[in-house]
Figure: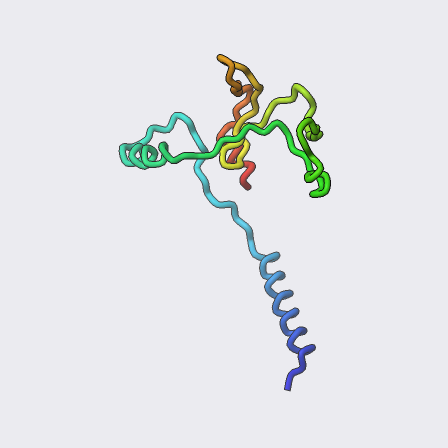
Length: 131
């Protein structure tokens, strides 16, 4: 009859064997096509693209971030100042569904705030950040 220690040893040996197999296995990169902006799209691809173009997304402009304790959060009131992790004049982050897509600066047009995009992150750079 096996003891719990024997079972743990067998499990550890199995894990060690699986890890060794992964280390010695030859790793090959997946073949991917380079992204190109000039590639023509077929009617079927255009239809698929048109299907997703009207999907709503959440866009956020982030001035900066800060971490504070709940105690300090509860003490905030009108006129309180929260220090952010950005320097004044530094570009804002433009996020779409939580993904950085651009940097920008605040502008006022007809008494409304807006964001002028100063640097748009390329599709290739956004895909690289996903890896």
